[in-house]
Image (cartoon, one colour):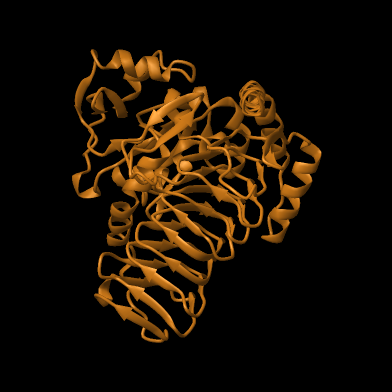
Length: 433
């Protein structure tokens, strides 16, 4: 049995997180989208399971490096036998609603007018290739059986933030029951004890409060929760993450090996990022290797309680929500007391320094804010040296594939970066005039 995650054209709408990773690597709840998709088809425990992925060419080498057992952009493997093709943006429904694959009958699972998955026998894969998967599936709407897929096809990052509460609850329901409440932890519990899941090797200091009234609190292996931390469910604390007198509000997922203090509400931190000191982070999605300096805050609510708009690919997009925070790409850093506006987009490898007020709402990748002005930040050797030091502090190394991705990404983003710099300069000149 084989499953292949594929990226469609709308994966780029999940930027800045998908600038440096495939969409199926995004975290929602306690697990990533790829894990949820495999779980839905009940393939996770199969010894014969083969995994593959179709990703953008710029991500091919780093994806192959991260998943060495997968078949990445392998055209021959794609047509070798029966296959489940799964859209990387698909957030499945509960596994209790899972399908029973019938390999003899091609079938497409649809969410509205988009293909979420396709169950195809080898005979139906003739003509399918890396370059035409989307077109092949589009044509398949008139050739194959069509049925509702359930779940949703996520379009924007703020949707993942919205679904995070329910996904934590669902993922927790599927956890190993041995992660029920430990009696050896000096933790004050508010709410039902069966909603508290603490890994055997997690460390919980005295004077920690877990509130499970509204949902589960999940603390993964090796996590450290220091004194005076408050955890409000539903929330997920990833493996090796440290909470330092933090206030974690409902709807928050923190990936592995983060360092988090201050207040975090309804946000997702992908992993290996720092928000060590006080400051507020709300309704946000933060990438990996991000450092939010002491006193960094983001607004997640307009003063007039109106709808928040986010600028993406030069378009002003209505979110349909009154609470939207910031979206920050990998390796971006903020200085002391940086203030981020509602609906801020900050790309990868940005350096954001405080201005005494709110920073621009759009900071393209490889840019910075210096003395209140948007500037280019494309000294790649310096950026790579810093990234290498950051990874080394967590026992990681910056691979050749990762370095090449950074170089190619900087080149790919050049037009967007230059246009943003021109627009920012024109706005500055108009203000002076």
